[in-house]
Length: 486
Image (cartoon, rainbow, N blue to C red; front, side, top):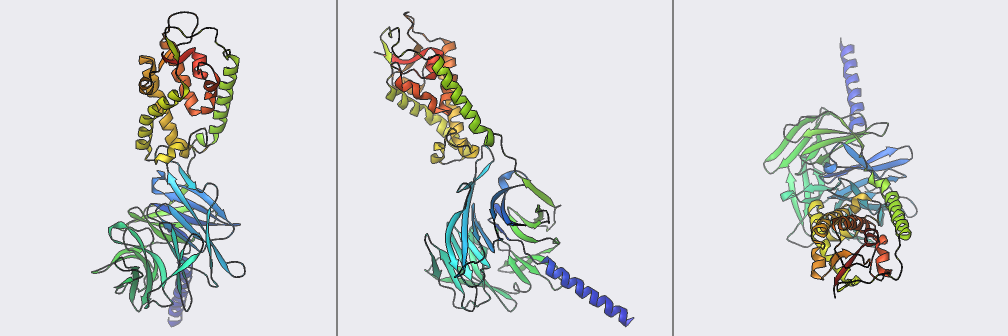
């Protein structure tokens, strides 16, 4: 009986040891609360993938491939910092960064810089950097050792940040949610059963605010980054993991969680916690844990976010349209000297007035596009004929499309837009020897449609600059002229 009991105990201890070794969080991830970044190991290195709450589904996008697995990721809002293992002589850890944005009109995410990573100053360190955080446009890293160093990235180099005098060699650097949901960071250290944190003091330069969380150091594993309040992952004596909230009145435990056997970690995302794991095939799985009840949802496999057709058909479509319109213009090109002169006291509206009128007419479309997409004013400069990225071109496309529609209605009904009214311009019939200068509904409608096409491909408007009556392709094909009373 005693032999059997000893055998059972030994087997239990062996299984527990195996479970402990396999279940420690090992996946390199970072979360800002709304954006999740994951380093997925591959046979040739790793790939960095991105998941966001606004992707409207269990989607991810691959943003970079790296030759080796990074030793740390750090996230802040829509920014990511990547710290690589040290190489070379002296040992230097390369540091990269990137930024993502989403266009609400299309739901697509785009990454800057496009097709590459920003290179930040490398970190010279003979030891492996294991902890880093990201402020707005600033990376901080903790260099371990007997005499630890806290450094902050500048534009060309790193500078030292004074550490708290009471911090010891076992300290670590981690995100630490502050009051009001503002993302901050802290130096953490386990002292006995307590967890001690030092956060940068706001009321003094280079000062620190210290807090002690009784019993929070028991089984402390990691800070759960991306959580909307302070949260840590702890391991109980039985080997199970629990989510713990340190509060001023004591610790609050969410409950035990089941962890996968594959590489995993845990982050905060939105109002939930997410267990992130990867399998041998490189698939990324998320398990949602409710932050109040602690109930876990079924595993969800993230798949590649579908791309819009415009991402690949854009340039061929614009190119074919431009070539076709140019050929049409050359086929029906008017003579350099019109056979008939303008009659009825009309003269062609000078080109600079037409450009000024167009600028005025674009204002309502610009306001509408900014309101719909939430874009910045400078993003309206990314015209659809200049970039194949539909997400970047969406605000300008909405502006031009909206302008074409409402200006077309004005020109068909009133033969002029508000901008043309201001500068005295009207849509009239091209001179044909008669005295009737009315353009008619059909000609005005055709010109409005062709004008919208030219707005999306402005290269087609070059004919208006060389024609004596400033007739571009819309006026040439519709046999109209933008004119004013002499």
